[in-house]
Amino acid sequence: MPRISKDPEVRRNEILDVAMELFKIKGFEHTSVSDIVKKMGVAQGTFYYYFNSKEEVVNAACERTLLSRFADVKSTTENAGLTAFEKLSKIILEAAPTPQEQTVLDYLHDASNITLHQKWKVAEIKALIPYVAEIVRQGVKAGEFSIKQPEEAAEFLLVGAAFWLDDGIFKWSDEEVATKRNALRWIFDQLLGGVNG
View 1 (cartoon, rainbow, N blue to C red):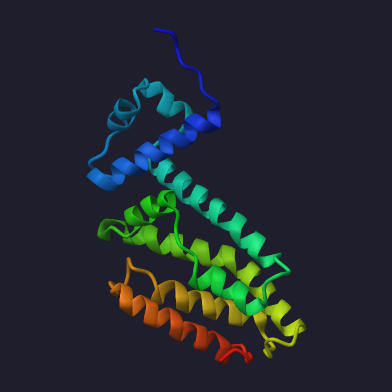
View 2 (view 1 turned 180 degrees about the horizontal axis):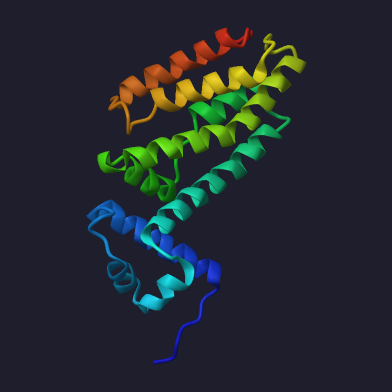
């Protein structure tokens, strides 16, 4: 049987997808590298060509998820057709994870991964702050918001929303989440001295 050669990035992403799927089903501790390569139908050396350990796979999956999200965030930040308030809503309140992102989030939300989950949240918030601060500055410049400390306001908005809406921390019902999202729109507007409330 001829050896199938794949683009390295494609193969790396396949390993990430299969590993995260197995981590979600079997748990991180109960999934071996052998399980991952068996499901993929490749040699064990293929895994170690791309990753040194299962922990490295998790870190890479988290980074990939963040990179995917930030392409959308950057595009929203630069979208001149949206008001600053609409941009904030889109980035903070309306962002829905892709199936690939949801697999990572499900893994992080497992009780045994609480430390990793906290690190993920902090990394996500720190990466989002410059974009959200820029949107707040855009809103101030356009007369949409009246606030003197956009960076701190951005941090407060992100930290509050990130933890309040995290279903790995609070187990809100769909109805409760919808109510909280609506409340956050008003809270954002009040905090930023806006005209949308």
